[in-house]
Amino acid sequence: MAATTEVTTDELDSLRKEINGLDDELIRLWQRRAAVSKRIGEIRMANGGTRLVLDRERAILEKYRTALGEDGVQIAMLVLRAGRGPL
Image 1 (cartoon, rainbow, N blue to C red):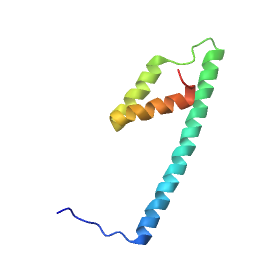
Image 2: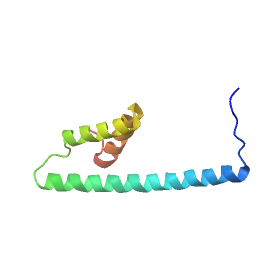
Image 3: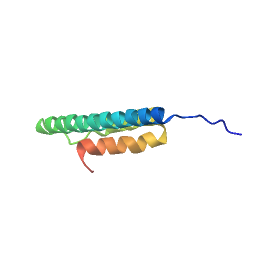
């Protein structure tokens, strides 16, 4: 028989508020990361470079895969796309 955990309404409300705060922070960080990434691309292109650097993207993909498993790859692809746009 699976163990059950009694959760009070106050605890549930508190946890939901925490999730809402975490979501707000994730959104803020996502937007900031995208802005920084776009600026890096602008600077790179203004100096004769390419829009993206494949070695850098591969390193980011691997970082997310290592930390989060295969779902991390999907997250990393979305993060990269937010900063550079679709390929």
